[in-house]
Length: 354
Image (cartoon, rainbow, N blue to C red; front, side, top):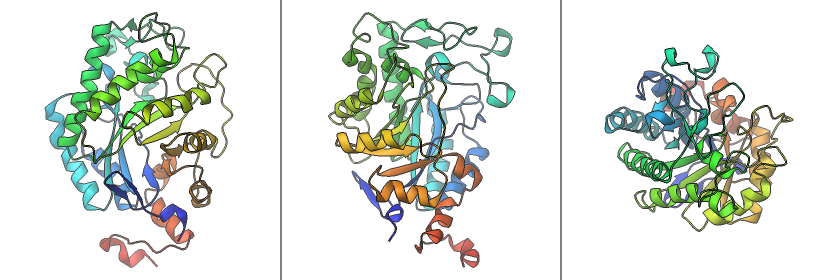
């Protein structure tokens, strides 16, 4: 049996293999509501054999959206549509997961295919918030520095979103602490210049995330996994780095987090990153080896051989696939065949299995 297709149980949730559909923004919602595009997009990856299917970054408040097209879970009316999708995913032997997010200073932007720039007043821009009043890049409006009350309100928004996620049928929550969005902005000394209990030291910069984790764990069942996605490095000498990520992992393992999903970058504009296959895997490997957490590898992982190598060599416990699953929703089924593993196909597709 190829290591990639060995099952993995996290708390009470059993993953049938080690392939997870990474959160991928679709920018296709209106007022945060899920629709048929998301049903087909997420549902086809469940049919395609992934062990778990994660929604895109799902905003915990309207102001936390990256764009007006972001998926949302800030009101009860969102639950019914989400439940339709989780029911479909579960019916096809995959675990439904949701990524809870707040975009911070990177909110209020146009969708990518319309340029992705900060919205203008005429386009419906809304005020953005961050740990410090520092714009993401030159020419963009500076966010408002969050008050302690606003920080506490945001923690409550994450907690309430988790309660809705449970009602909507999700069994995995991932907290989005990466890619320069709000939690990442608090973690990194490059974007957090606060002088209070949420800034300065590593402990203080981590406090916002810890508050969110602890608040979610109060309402999220103990039998269900809680994942955190991090940017394991800012790729700059004065920002967040791999050592910080290991320290954070050791902190989060005491707070009820089960797995770190290890991405990188996105918090500092203009940083040049040498992109190559599996370039982020070493960060997941460090988390796996230096903490008691499970780790997930993501980023330019595109072949069955690469996935198998990561799992078989103990570099990570799961792989999160994104663009490769956009190219091929049935990649897990094809990878199983390539690795000589016989896995079930949907009954409707049996005639094509050989």
